[in-house]
Amino acid sequence: MTKIILAGGFGKLGLAIQTGLVGTNYEIVGILSGHVHDSQYPVWTLLDKINVSADIFLDVSTPETVFDNAIWAIEHDMAIVIGATGLTDNQITDLRSKTQRGILIVPNFSLSAVLLMQFSQLAAQYFPDVEITEVHNPKKVDAPSGTAVQTAKLIADARVNTPMKTSDGQARGQRVADVPVHAMRLPGYIAQQSVYFGGIDEQLTLTQSTTSRSAFVPGVLLALAGVEKITGLKIGLDSVL
Ligand SMILES: NC(=O)c1ccc[n+]([C@@H]2O[C@H](COP(=O)([O-])OP(=O)(O)OC[C@H]3O[C@@H](n4cnc5c(N)ncnc54)[C@H](OP(=O)(O)O)[C@@H]3O)[C@@H](O)[C@H]2O)c1
Image (tube, rainbow, N blue to C red):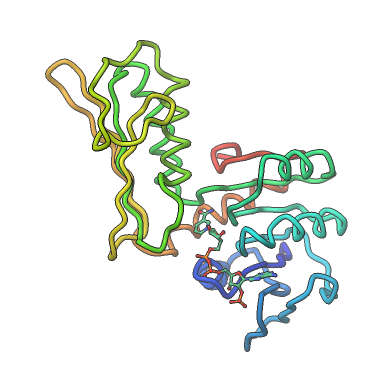
């Protein structure tokens, strides 16, 4: 069994991971959390109280805690999977320079979102005219989503031809790498993204959506399997697919 310390294990994503790891080759040996919770696992609220060792430190805690957690896990010789958002570029550079084992930062565990990005890169080689819509729950603070921004950048890199010039009013979305991105915030949604490609008398639309946090579990399992095979720091689930 591969031993896992789970940070943020009682959050919305953490609870889905607790359930998702049952019956797999991964054993949760303890949970780091902001508060004490009743649990079948040991629960710590401070890093220096952790009194077990593990193979992998899996972090789905908060933007405020993720960096210090990663430094602690490096010092304790663990491979690290980071699903929590909020690391700055400087912090990522710092982690890259310090790690001896693999660190995998996964901004999106959703396999359908990762595949949507890959398919979009392929389509952008042939269809330079493209726009993105994304819909998330109103509680999401950032807009456009990190996944939409990343998709737009990948499309811009893959594009062979220049897109048509179009009007540029407020309703035309935010230009990210010259791709208009439209963000909606609506109850009833967790995450949905569509990429619209327009060609001569033809259209291609790619859509992915996530309807519960359980959707992230297959990606978490792939990340856990992948992180032990890499050295150094890598970003994105696609780097271990
Ligand atoms: N990569 C992906 O695909 C993906 C998908 C969804 C979310 N996320 C990211 O994952 C993170 C968690 O998301 P969420 O929706 O699960 O958030 P959430 O429900 O707010 O959960 C965050 C958890 O972090 C815990 N926490 C607070 N302080 C901590 C500390 N010092 N050490 C360890 N844990 C601490 C909290 O514990 P208490 O409950 O005890 O206070 C809480 O349970 C966010 O950064 C989010 O953006 C990533």
